[in-house]
Amino acid sequence: MKTVGKLSCVLVVLIVAIATFSALLVPAPEPGIPVYRYEVVYSYPHDRFAFTEGLAWDDGTLIESTGLKGNSTLRRVNLTTGEITTVRHLADQYFGEGVTVLDGKTVQLTYDSGIGFISDPDSLEPQGTFNYTTRGWGLASNGHTLIMSDGSSTLYFIDPETCREVRRIEVKALGVPVTNLNELEYVNGEIYTNVWPTDRIAMISPRTGEVTGWIDLAGLLPEEEREQIGWSTIENYRKQPSLRLADDACLNGIAYDPDGNHLYVTGKLWPRSYEIRVVPE
Figure 1 (cartoon, rainbow, N blue to C red):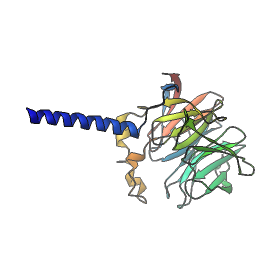
Figure 2 (cartoon, one colour):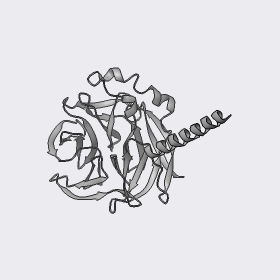
Figure 3 (cartoon, rainbow, N blue to C red):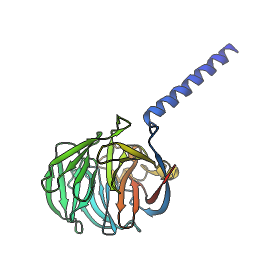
Figure 4 (cartoon, helix red, strand yellow):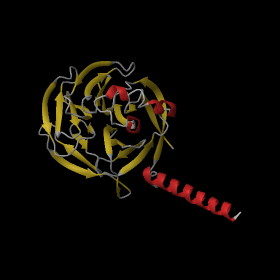
């Protein structure tokens, strides 16, 4: 009986330790900051081979940037059907990242090359390049300035004419820096960003950098579909066979249609994209 009692104690300690470790990996939203849930308005087909790194809305269709060296693209996508209507393949040395549309031009980042591409949004033909000294993660526009993330807690505001930084903010939640800021979108005066590799979107004040709310998108992609990611995609990426694609298939991609007030999200290698409605918890 004493042995059984000791084993029970050990099991309890292990369970508590595992729960504590899991909580550290995916911290809960901070108390005092509103948490929003979601309602799915529509579900659309999405290219399950698209390693989505950037998403933007332009003239009724999606502009999508996909990553992985040797497989990176810039593409125009029919939202309803998921059909790729126009595509440009990046050279093998580039890892495509965030994308946005500003002043009739498509602007796309790359991950670790320090170079961005300016393209015609219709043909996607390149029209120029620009350089930056950080890594490229997410990109958005407030209509007159580019907003860029680099995986840290800092967001950079870039003059589109000179491609120079004009200011920066540090993103914090109740005074604590929020890192791994990824894909960005400007929505109704706030900056939305995926926080890699979680299922959360942070809503950020562009003036102060404070997190004003969290959108919890846990469960958006059904678990049975998430579990299939990796098995059917690994063969498609023979150039990078060491990638554990199933582990990387996180929420990533936010696009906003201001005319219709529609919010679209997807993820890396997800077979679906979604229009969602954000509602109070």
